[in-house]
Image (cartoon, rainbow, N blue to C red; front, top):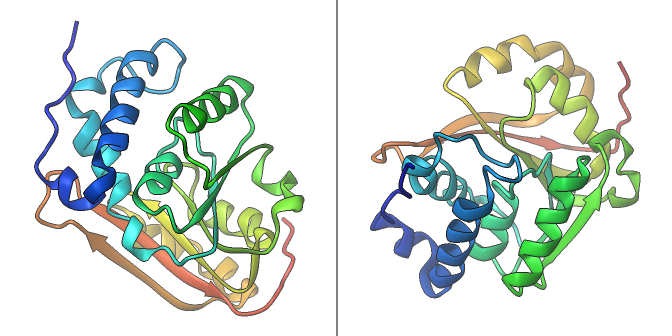
Length: 214
């Protein structure tokens, strides 16, 4: 049986006085994750660095307000961000029942009163329109992700998507959608460059309410 990765020193910096909650979440995910189909069998030796710390790097980019996490799954990044940023309300949007059950149970176990769990696909979560920001991690390419999440944002809301090493290629492939939605301040950046698992982020502003289909 593989062992859980030792907590990296940077975790205490990222979570501050809420690091114990991050430890509890990581231990719970290590214990339940594979059994409940939340993480793969090879993730324990890199659970902190690849998943928890990787997600927490996004926390400083969040604004106080309501932030949606689309396809929240195991709570990466949604539950991690709720731990790191108690001043932000996270709306975890997830269509799969067993994952919704996990998100609900875990947010309760951690005492996170800044979390709402919604069972829905992004395109069906219309009751949660008006979000200040929306994020997603390992969900789909930007060309598909942007149109289905744009209706969730308020005017002036921001996309803050966690992406892989090919984020710039995704941006290039999504230019038609970016223009059609009228996005501004489009950029990519790398967070935690000094770490083994840096976080790449796509950011853009939705200047006014637009509905896009197709």
